[in-house]
Length: 626
Image (cartoon, rainbow, N blue to C red; front, side):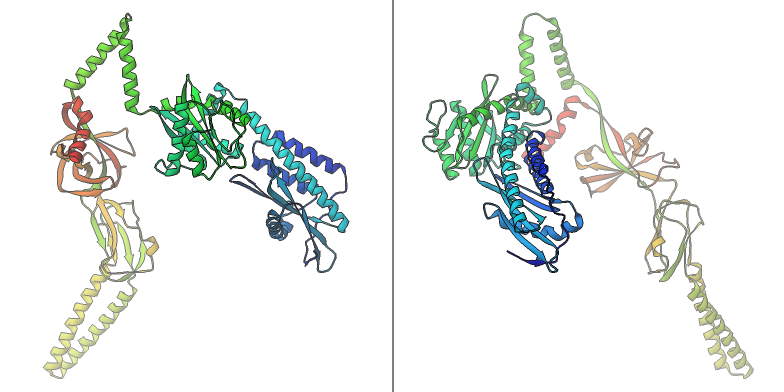
């Protein structure tokens, strides 16, 4: 179908027949060079685009729940023009099976191009995607030739894709127990290893769902289900899978639930109630469970689910079992490595008692005596009990400097963190309006002086007293004005450090009455404020001593003494805390208010066992009212 468009120039496809054979060779080489479908189909698209000299191509392939999409652009400028059309043509081609072409002509008739698309197939000859691209053309015959060439490339790529999948399966089947252990060494927990196994098998076998559970105390705990970040063990679907796994664990044999006639031998169980129930829940899909052995016992169960039209073959089940069973030992090892402290302690104690009761080997007896001695020391011994408490250095007093009236900030001379001495200039306000008002008041005083002299000359006592009163009022206003002028310049009242106040961004703006300008703390007289948790508040008494170190210089410790305990608690970042003040030698030049540190308070001697368990006892008493 012809369409008129403003076409960008496209280079025509090469006529060299050798390029076609090179394309087939490159597609065949992909089978042995790539490790994933994503890389495989990306390279297929690039090879096809190169063979047809296409500046713009796109591919979309679906494998199970996995969707693979890639784009190719050899010329960025032209690709931005043609890519939307190629993507639209690809979408249209996904709904149809086979190859198709669309011819386009420019308005001037000079540029002639074509959109081509072809379908990709899976191992069962079912369509799984398509590839679309744009090429130059010289005539209908040339377009037909290129379409046939594209169809042959996609057919070959589909065949090579099947070979690629079989190659991946052969690579998996070559592993043994040692290789499985090496691969499992990169995982920390059995859940992580199970997550990798289930999702890998789902992609390799094209399954709808793969689950892996581990046996503990004659029960199965599901570690991972493919496609899920976590296992919701209370959901009905997960419980159904778990029941099927436990059925396989009890029977210790492979179980497959599929259509009648697919499994007919006694090697595989095919008529088990819980697996039938699982199959009914998934609307007739084929389900299977495989026991994984290690150390002559079943340690894990692998369950698979695939669409009803794609049953498992016996060869596939055997191959999966041979590939996955070596990982059973790795799962068991990771499970032992991730046991809880209680389980580790019970197992270690049991082993130690067994060895101790064996005859001979005096060393074991000595070790037992040492353990008994340590237990006695923990029970009856006492050690120094120290509290480690976060703290912060704070000034004992702070001088606040605020704006005495509304004025314009002219300049600032210090900022937060600067050291100042008494009388040092801090900042100043604009005095021009005040100076002008002062000049006006001086002029008024002169006028009132003249009026007073005139009234005196005219012997008019009333005018004289009025001029005198106005003169006094003007002088009072002048005194207020001069006081304001003096207060336009702010100086430090003490020697110290500016702990708050950075007015550089406010220069030229109006500062309102009462706005804070600076906070200055003295160099000396700083205190240490400790935030003691409520659980340790009863241990705090006056005159307790300890040591203190700042985060800035943790190697330098100082002796401190509790000087004050505030009567009320305060809400801090870690919860309620009792605020305690302590004094120490903090006259070093580098010490600044706000520095944080850690204080170690010496409370006294306490029993060893009490130090270890008193917090647990307090928690139980609080929660359980024991």
